[in-house]
Length: 357
Image (cartoon, rainbow, N blue to C red; front, side, top):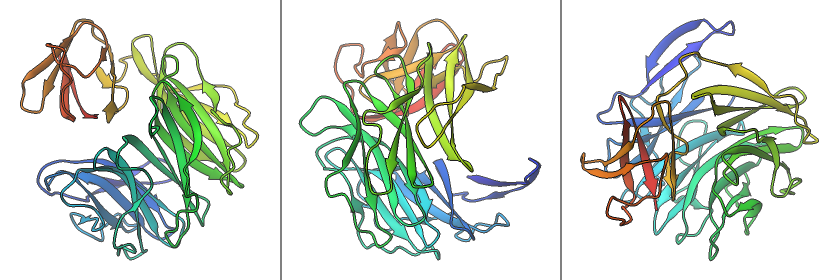
């Protein structure tokens, strides 16, 4: 795993090796506490997969060479998709931990990288599946946001809870942001002037970008969310950042057989500005793409090539041949396949993804 420093004018300064450990390190994310960075990732040097991290100085030098395993994890269970945030006085890392389902867990770290919790803070029940998590902070408390199943219900939901700097969950009952019979996934969070803006991919139609404003006290201002972009075609993988007086939301949009990047501004009242195209590539991005990774339930693909998609398990065995671009998680004989890593192939393109149950 590598890191790079970039000057304000966009010039690449240098690169450095953060981890050269054996096997895969994937899903790198960064947070900054005002003095140093914290990089987190999913690391496969251990079996099962675990969360690792390192502090990185402003000169790009890793302070924990090859990374440190997060000690509050269960070493016997899969831990994946970590995201960090900092309120300036420390860090919080949240991730998905395998149990009877996939639960949202978190742990605090001091600015020196030492764990502040002896056991993981758990936000969701063991019996349900969560498949994406995001973090935001107002400089004091954290907002932990996740998408997943609703206990005892067939719908899916976006929920959140606030966490104090001393590790106390401030909302014993998670706050529901949006609920849908379709999947809601890929959350992102930013904060500005008393308001958190949470954005996500919503599959109530063909893949759209929605958002919701939440006050510091946990009050949801836009129950169910409001549309940022619902134009024809697939919009997914949103990112959000706060500026001086408004938020900017970016996302990947699939149209004309290519992936392009679009953006829209959102002010504190929830007013969406004009959508603009940030980048268009004539060659059109990736040849084969999983629209939500990790995936749960139906796995949706976007491909520039025509022809069937073939799904293989991690041992190279053929699992399913698809006529369309959606896989229901069953093999060619109609049986549900187990959770795990799979590879999709179409013509000369391939991509790997994680299927959750």
